[in-house]
Amino acid sequence: MPYQKAIVFFVFALLYLAAKAGCVAMAIWMHAVAPDFIGRALTAYNTRAKRCFALGVVNALAVLFLCAVLFGTQLEPLGLLGLALLLSLAALAMVGYSLSYHDLGRQLRDERAWTPARTILLGGIAAEAAFMAPVIGQVFSIGVLFRGLGAVVSAMLWRGK
Image 1 (cartoon, rainbow, N blue to C red):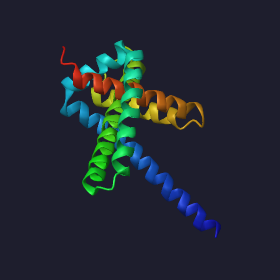
Image 2 (cartoon, rainbow, N blue to C red):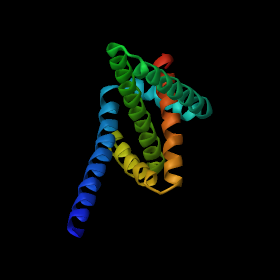
Image 3 (spheres, helix red, strand yellow):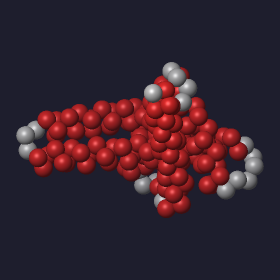
């Protein structure tokens, strides 16, 4: 019996690490695929932190409320629309986390000439390690989530340089 619990724990730990590695890999891929969008979002993330945080909180709560309303209806197509909206919010949140990986990696590299992939990789590892701290890490993760989500929404609405 104790072996079964250890195996289950080990499997869940491996799945958790695979999910976190996927998040960091997605951040590297997003930087390679859409560098202009990521640049606009990073500008918003770094220059308008409080505004991005507020925008992220408002958008997350509004979308979650709308999803709850759509899920509560008796019409199946509206429930599917709510599911699509919820998945879109999750995708935008992941892009928001990728901004924090890039920003933390930029701070870690200091003046060294690293490639963007290495910067994001090391920033992602450091951020995910910080997120695993019991209480402080979870609060930090929620703050990064809202700030990154607001920066992504701001970059979607703002087409500046």
